[in-house]
Length: 284
Image 1 (cartoon, helix red, strand yellow):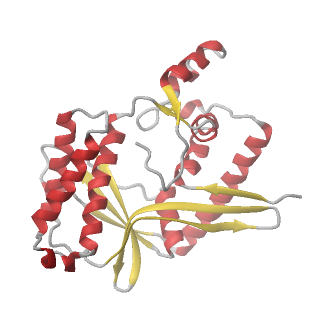
Image 2 (image 1 turned 60 degrees about the vertical axis):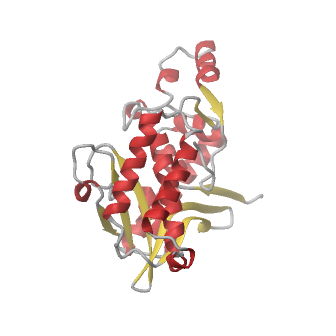
Image 3 (image 1 turned 135 degrees about the vertical axis):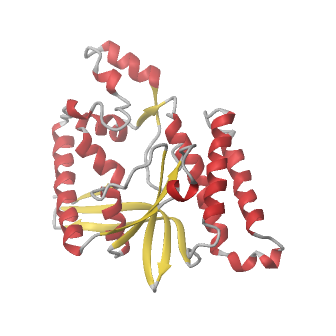
């Protein structure tokens, strides 16, 4: 009997839990909307500038050797953002608003304690589960990893136009902690609110996960992966209609609202194109 090897990450895991049909469209058929939602593009833009910023900050000791200061570094990151913004569907005002948010963030946290940077946008895979029939590889792309008091701590940047506390039950957060062998994670909140002062919209949340919680997450993840494999074997992708309006609303809601047959196929061809998912790729 051939051993099954499966790769999973937080996006695919949550898609299985969210709706089997959604998972099938997005990760089996690799369908993504032709028109990228603005909130995703804003996220891609702010992440690009933050990645550049923390890469440069990792080598901060070289700034003075090259006659550069913090403002020079911030401006270099903004230049990266403007270049990336030209390739997006965002209008110029949205690009400039995102740049201003980035500028406010770097002004607030210029002299923080995040100076010992281990890695930026680290990509990796590790065996989560293995028996004679199945190996599950868990893949990650972690925004930032810090070395704090001789321990590696993952950091996830989260952007939003509304002030919100992070989800303690997130698959992504527990998966990062398991992968790094850490019981702590920092959620770096990037607020886009226009009437909120920087200290209140750029908050940093420290989440702690006891080992028992992480072990429970592993068991839960293995169950859902096996559920997904059964789903694939049976070629059966039931629709979970209770998820249609969750979060920003399902991208495929208007597909499932149409009668089965040619109309659905027409809408899929019209509104989506193929783009294969991988945690290490840029998806915007």
